Length: 343
Image (cartoon, rainbow, N blue to C red):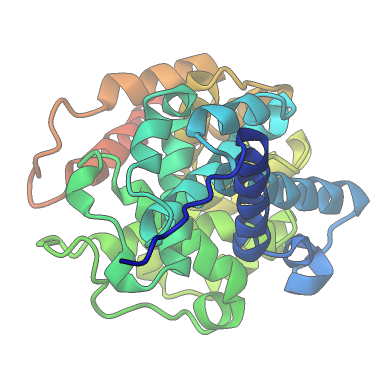
């Protein structure tokens, strides 16, 4: 009988090999940083400050993505994510959400990375991580998409938001200038309300703020070229991005509020979601306060409180709408009655 000799590498050598494989995985899976440059994307440049802000957001997102795909465990990624400056840390967690989502969708990446991540510090950034999963879906073949049953049934629509942002950001001609919309988005498999396209539009709206370079007139001009039935969701996305990412001083935000017209409640609803995401993660920074004061007429703390108070107790559909949409409408209704955005 032939004898087989099994050579087991020394512990140090094994560690080096594992580290090399993780580094290779990072290089293969991480998009090029050039893809975050305004010139590469062909996006509008308002001024140097806005350009630097948006490119830093993109670079930070990719850094978070890289931390996830290179890490041995989600905890290891968290240690690096927590070193990102407060203003940009949420974008790094969003990128990590994409990274772990991609790993879960690959045969060699494991299958419970997102779940483990959300049991740790990722839970503070739950909204951003869910958006990151949508980015991952945009890069994965559909047969590798996650099961919707594994996600929070109320918040899973944020995955569509992330998918919509990705498509508008990287396929701008098709999704923004040609207003492409899939006739029947295939995820979740059972969507009796056909709500997926609306949630995707909310992500496209967020992307318009980036594509327009945080220039109010540019972003609104892009929005107003869409069919009007899509405007409410697009305005919500712009409100979220203008509050969470920033890039516009108070006088420009006042103009944004004025341009919204009868869609001010939807603009405010997006701003409320941004405030809640920032406060949940303890990442509140001055521009968030300015944005919620202008777009909502209240403080970020009060905005986050409204989000929590109106959040449905169940994810069951209400009145023929997903609970997530009922939540959004309840928030918007607060601003119709308060009058903070109607004067």
